[in-house]
Every structure is written in structure tokens, then in C-alpha cells.
Amino acid sequence: MEKVQWPTREEVVYSTVVVLVTVFFFSIFLFFADSAFVRLLTWFWELAG
Image 1 (cartoon, rainbow, N blue to C red):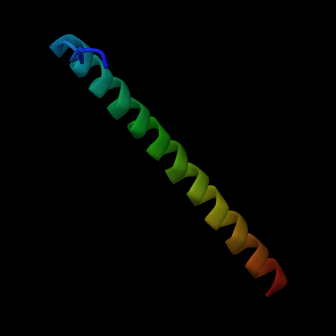
Image 2: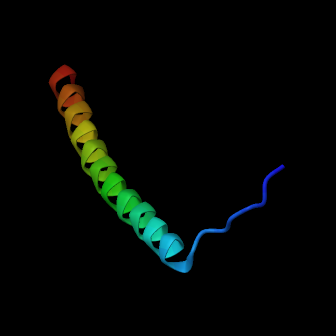
């Protein structure tokens, strides 16, 4: 078994920033996708109504 090499502080900070930015943009995308889906379903519901 090999010796474990821990990441440097810079690597941890960079990885954390990448994860936070990715989560932020993905959550924005999901918010707008969900909003569009709700509007579409509401429109269909009123059309069938």
C-alpha cells in the first residue's frame, strides 16, 4: 500500500471553488427549468380545463 499524499491548500481551495460554482449554476438551471415546466403544465391544465 502506498503512502497517502494529501492535496495542497491551493488544490483544496480551487476544488472547493469549482464545486461551489458548478452547484450554483446547476441550481440556477434547475430553477429555470422547473419554472418553465410549471408554466407549461399550468398552460396544459388551463387548456384542458
